[in-house]
Image (cartoon, rainbow, N blue to C red; front, side, top):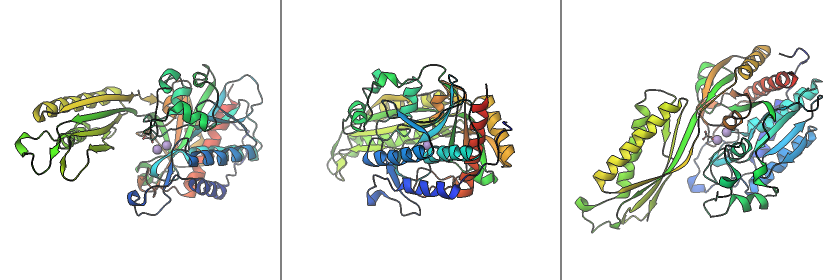
Length: 428
Ligand code: GLV
Ligand code: MN
Ligand code: MN
């Protein structure tokens, strides 16, 4: 740990006010869908009006902190604090500011605004980085618009090629290509991938999104690995008809078949007996969707994750077998389309060690843990050593308006992040 680092003053009051201000940039949700709970409901879809305004606010704060600003063709934005030694690979941090429909105000944003606050604290302490420190605002970590998560970091790491990226369209048929240009991001998508060796390390500050830290009264989670998500679209095709006239024995009801598949998804995940295996059907579109019509077609989303690739793929095979069985017994068709099947990423021992030393220096209670949610770090791990710093959230709640992180917890996370950045950026 660098001994040159003086006392770190984090203005956590200011940071919380900034998080609240950022939360005001929301696309809004339909009243009928909103849950009646405490908290601010945030929906911020990439390249929408709220996303543009929120990006503007972050950019202003970064400039105020003395950082230079640059964006790539997909809208990843880099806020840079120049190091004293030119030519060395930078150390990066950052996260995302897009938010799924009816989300909370801390997921991702703590890692972006918190990183700027960490830079302010480091500057305030008189620290000078040897390697440049970059705060990255990644485009579209959430899959809301284009169906694929971590779009910006995926492209930056070269995991999604520009050939595949140009094929992406949102639900209204608008292409990534036209939307990103309209949002003001010029240049070639082929240039988003960074050159090998661009980064010496990456560390992301994020809320835990689970209950472990709070339950154990710990302030920091030191992430050791990030789960591997696999995601598919499934379509069940049966036969529709009149809900009164079509007799039960001859029905090929697509929704009843889909219901059995959904149950099989749950059973397959539970059958591993591992708490790191999770499987979710989060979307279900029924066609034609009329009270007096037998469903002829159902579209389902499937999301399966695990920290162990083989176990996750075993769950997928069990689900596919169940789909085949349901299809033949109920005389329906089940079609599958892959969205992505990413491999898990381990965090680098040297970054884990830097996070743990920072926790010791700050006197915070920490524990090692895995991340079952995915993050941009999953893709940064393909190009440099990575780590993550988790802070607890109330009740483990996330992706909901009542997501909440206490000011003191955010402050501890920012202080730990600042120390890790100081350490990594001082290394030769
Ligand atoms: C990210 O938001 C995830 O779904 O893990
Ligand atoms: Mn999220
Ligand atoms: Mn997130």
